[in-house]
Image (tube, rainbow, N blue to C red; front, side):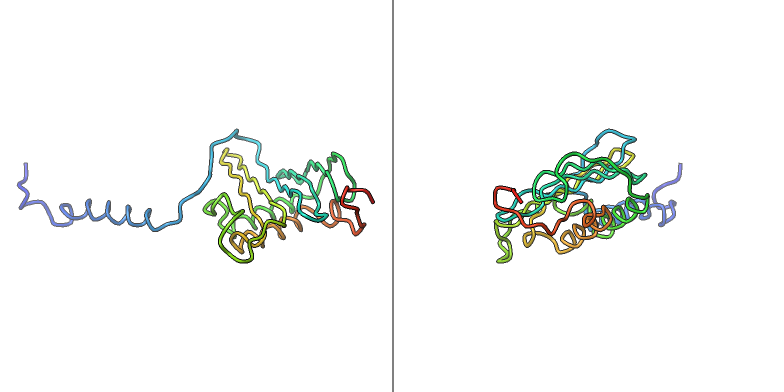
Length: 180
């Protein structure tokens, strides 16, 4: 067996140095937040918008990779009720791209309150759930003005991908009780 003085310096310092570099890289990379292991094989992206102090649309829309969707439209929407349909697969691609570009997995899962002056109680809470085919799942709750600007942008991009203007939004005026 070789003595320590006979072991090349690369071997003596190489392994501990590699471990330190790897630990530093992990410590400096953004960690996933709020991610759970869920069922596999059924990827979905769900966009849910809750009530506000005015007449904001209240709905939940689930999108699948093939473009199929399930819409539960509750109040202040174009057509209340439960609806199923199909967009094209490009809807999923656009939604997934928006979430990836916003670093969804590393975003704080609760973005509904802060000390920012723009964070008020009036706007609705928007929930975004993304579950991958591998079963990685996260739900992020966001209130306009309270969270990361990237998430505000993602909400708009998800609305476009999920055909919000065609399926949900209406220019009808509503009474506070929801009647037209």
